[in-house]
Length: 83
Image (cartoon, rainbow, N blue to C red; front, side, top):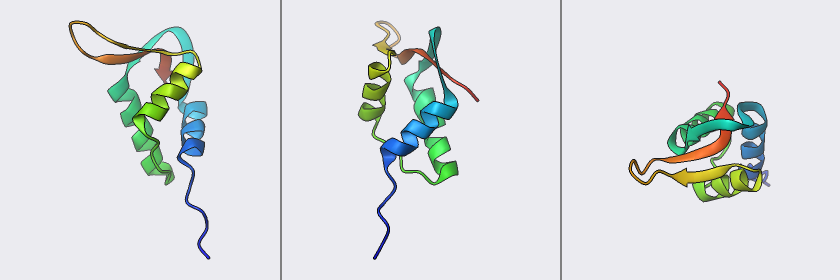
């Protein structure tokens, strides 16, 4: 019998606990945040959670997702990725 596959939500929670800092003055482009998360997943053998689930989790934890009207860059406000 095979063990159950890893839970993407658990990997995301571990990444968020170790690599994200919630602070009102911070902001990170969503692409940069997701790239850091995907690299972390690759280094830790974790499956990647879907982008919409990641953004929903972030907004549920107080972050704001905004897309610039001129630049069309989506940023997550209230979060910093700690290296």
